[in-house]
Amino acid sequence: MIYLLLAAGLFMGWSLGTNDAANAFGTAVATRVIKYRTAIIIIAVCVIIGSFVGGANNIGEVAKLATSNEVIASTDVVTDAIESGMVPMLKLKSALKAAIIFVCAGLTVFGMSYFKFPVSANQSITGAIIGWGLYYADYSNPEILSVNLPQIGKFAATWVLNPLGAGIISFILVKTVGQLLEKKLSTLGGYDTLIKTGYIIAGILGSYSIGVNSSANVTALYFDYAYSETGVAANLLTNPVITAGIGGIAIALGVLTYSKKVMMTVGGSIADITQMDGFLVIIAMALTVVLMGNLMGIPVSTSQAVVGAVVGAGLTRGVKQVNFGVFKSIGLAWIGSPTIAGVLAYAVAFLTQGFFG
Image (tube, rainbow, N blue to C red):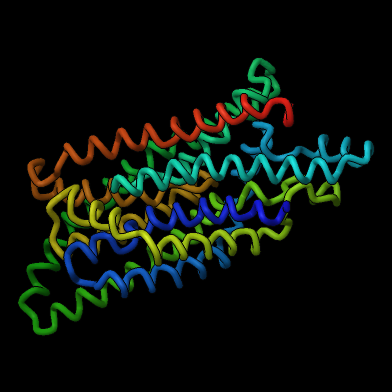
């Protein structure tokens, strides 16, 4: 039964894939440089590679936040369970809690995908974890606050810095490099082939960065953070590479099955951009995700990065080139996704207090 609950995490990954595919090839598909089918195959393969190669690096921070919010069992809780002979029950409860968080976050992301809004799976997971913690964790305890507040602050800071940084990088790239290159290259023979090759290379980099950055959001709650100290796993998975890899596979499935709606929103509705701009947007997104991930040490939103990059590219040709109505709607969705996920998790925590309390 416990392993069947892993399906909740896979649902979260599938939902993330339906939303995040746009981040790597949305501009390429919308500008008709790359066919949709070609794009999703490349994304799926590169996401899986990225998750196995570098996805494990982000698992620890998500697990720490989950531990301090009573989602993942702490070392003390695992030790008590060993002494009292309650390890099987602890494993069941840990798996159920992870499943609840993933379902709450996954439903939120899928709902946003249905309405064509690119949102952050990272925000939804964080919101659901905090929603659960607001019911079960003692936020009046200074020790709890000393762990939770810095973690929450770090996650929240990326929600502002990430799209802002991507917008700045994209603006600089398009303004200094893109417009100059476009004028020179468009007069050369084979321009279409060149720009298509560039999109594929940029898309591979972007897809790889999604695997590295986002796979932790999918299965981190099944990774046992306390295992290394206790020798007993309360959760399902204890190998971070395998944990991240499973997340990458789940994301790839979402990419392959239900990603076109959000892809067209990101690529064609936010700003009027050229083919060269779209190529540089993907580069800006990938650079921002890698830089922010290394700087903050936590998973950051590829969706926010690509939206910020598209806006930055559009602004190089004037404010009127950006559809701020669409951008406003996306911004509201960014606020709504962690809020909705948190409220859902809090409601489930209340309804299940007789079991988990």
